[in-house]
Image (cartoon, rainbow, N blue to C red; front, side, top):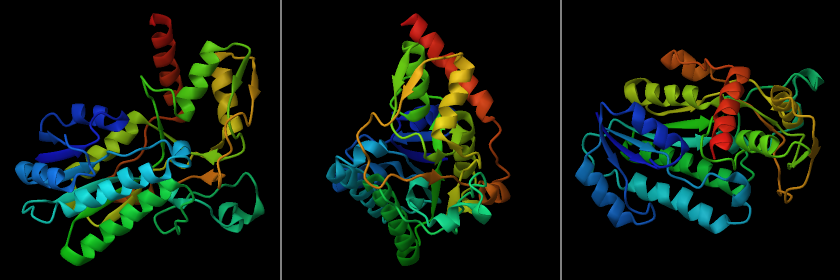
Length: 304
């Protein structure tokens, strides 16, 4: 297939292009916000599938750079969508959305039968209530894709991604940040909120899901898909799990990061729909994925 990819230098994109080498790949070179340049690249590539990964993804930073996040993540995506109008062979536009679109949820919809330890998993029918500039922009993109689908038949699949981990060169995000802080600081580390619940997916499983979606446009065009897995943990418990694996006995200084307005205290999702359509499901357990990520960072920090 002819595949047009944005965000090929990012965490997912850099791994994904390695998995797609048998296809004819075109990697976006222009600024997403430059409509004319983006359209020219699309026309020249004449893709059968567009894989749209490019975005600002640091949710916390979006609270302080609202305009930039909106311009890149929403306006940039609209430019790309509108650039498809002259394409004749497009089979699917695959968009990297996020579980963050669920935002705040009524507490009665979050805790089953009033039991604190019985956490529900959001699915594609759960009403989104995005509550961060990053999430608002991503949800707006989903709605624009739906509009384009209704108005001029644009085929699309939006993947609502879970917190991915397994990075080798970026410790900004939660899993890698916890691991690297503990490896570098035996006595104490500084983290933000400890009470939120999040679910996690290892990079290999995430890439497998993308490959299945890309290779099967006829099965998923017009769909929004959650990846899961349904494995939500309170961040405090997640930190303890990592500490146990590292035999780390230090002190965690909680609430040391800037307060995030509208912090979301539960994000969890299920992969039932994508499993039913593509027979894909996560295979790497949280324990196995953490062990592999810890190994990556131990070797990296040891070897400089």
